Length: 405
Image 1 (cartoon, rainbow, N blue to C red):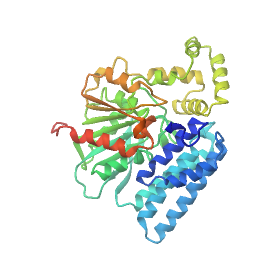
Image 2 (image 1 turned 90 degrees about the vertical axis):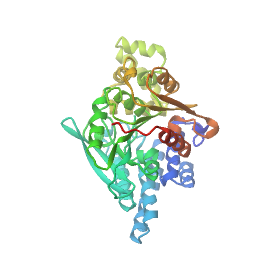
Image 3 (image 1 turned 135 degrees about the vertical axis):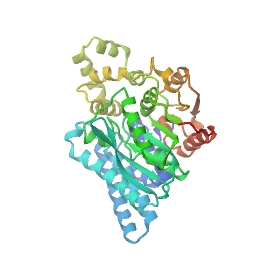
Image 4 (image 1 turned 180 degrees about the vertical axis):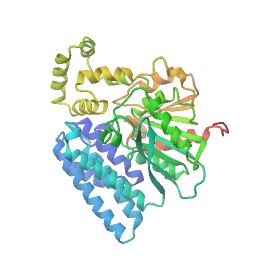
């Protein structure tokens, strides 16, 4: 299976290596470099993981600086993007105590800095933006193909459980801008800088996040108000769908992958008796069981630690209750925007969720399942972005032209 290609005995390491390698389409990795990095990492050894990815990131950043100094801007651009991706990957498993972890903060900062440096030497029009949100703001960036300041169709990127807004460039942003779209990405509550620097945690009622983002987009004269597309990635498939139950101004939604009940997907990996104990609030027993399991499972350890951090809860039992709110039950019928729902044949996180969402939608929608023979069967189709983008933009180009906001 593709998900075990890089590390046969550790699915989490292998998937994250595939994730990093998959960004080679748009300059975020070199396949040979990723293979070389992984060859130096002992399966399951998180210290090895951080060290080797960080070493590669520092090297790529230094090489990019040199290319920039000799006015080789295209190579500098690609070098900075590789550095950004590799720094992000180096930091990925550091979840024991993120808020107090100076190394985690440093690696995250270097990833974001490298991305901004890439944008500065690119030929695109890039700007950092602050999106008004309640009494605060959400960090984001806006990229146009050029500085013509004409109104263009715009894709808004909404990340998920662990992605950052800079990673959105590899997922869909670069492909969108290549095709003449604007690209707006942001970190919402529970994500990236909004989490690390503002301590904003995930919320299930994402309409209160998505509407301010669309409001901001519509203040811009370079955004076609009839051509806004919202792309929800991973858990973002739930967040965008939930937001769209109240936010109806987008031309289309791309849900990669579709999620109807995130809590159900989260619980799928747990024995049923655990949920019963959680419901009865036998938290000390539950937390002891979770602690035991995560001691020998990289994926379980990372998932629980990341969840406690991003949801702002103290324990695994608290997290198991918190995710129960993240469902579209009773509200999916309120989505009226045309949807493309993507599915992955062997999704190890959200298996069955896209079809469940499809069955509960009343709006115009299309479900596309990408399969193993295309190399696109893993969660979010890591490593198969040419095919993903083909499906996404075929769908968008097939939509009838709309003159209504």
